[in-house]
Image 1 (cartoon, rainbow, N blue to C red):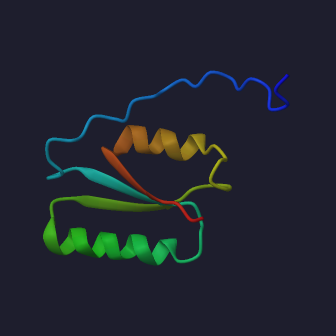
Image 2 (image 1 turned 135 degrees about the vertical axis):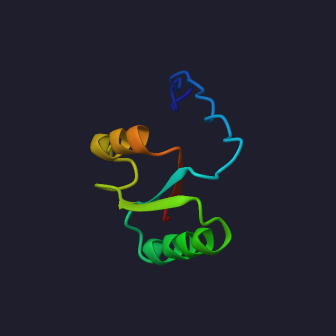
Length: 90
């Protein structure tokens, strides 16, 4: 007998399709609260302002720790955003 047991099956979820362009789109910059993530995401926002001024960036801090769900944030992103860059600390 294997003391590790039998792991449950894994359901693969494909990544979202890549956008054809970022022009005119809204990108959410989401932090999980790891120290320094806000500064990192701010640098990304500055890059977009300089290099892709038609792209709107929105910074949000996710509620709870990394594995915790944040239904309110996910609903906002689905309603108003086209892409997400998430800073995940270790």
